Amino acid sequence: MNIKRLFAGDTENTAVQFLRYCFVGGLAFVVDYGVMVLLVEVFGLYAVLASALSFVLGLSVNYILSTYWIFKKSRFSNRFIEFAGFAVIGVIGLGINTIILWFFQDYLAAIGAIPILPQDKYYAAGKIVSTAVVFVWNFFARKFMLFK
Image (cartoon, rainbow, N blue to C red; front, side, top):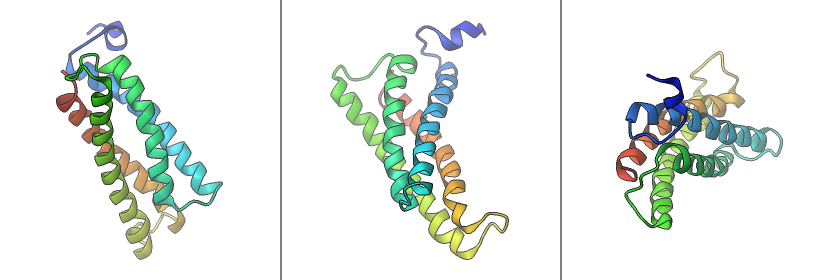
């Protein structure tokens, strides 16, 4: 496979789109995770709330880059409907994210399930797990529900 093809031009190849989504998702994760840690560590916000707020910023980065670089052919001619669908999938992802983060923060931390992890850092581990799960959900839901 041509390396240039992986990064430039339009493609309908799911494997190429998935690789590109890894880059976009990685950048969105840096925004999401960085803002969450900032809100928790610097501003003292409750981790689950901070995660929800940071998720919205990550979602915005993801939408912009996804529609311009990964998924060029929408199933919808109306951008508002496309964004609404993208956001609905994102909100479902946010629900998955929040449940996993809550489970780590309020359940696993309370019972000390991971002995090597300080109790006040379970939110960070939960965010990594939730990001992986939501990443897979978001890619396949968007690929097959919103884009051609």
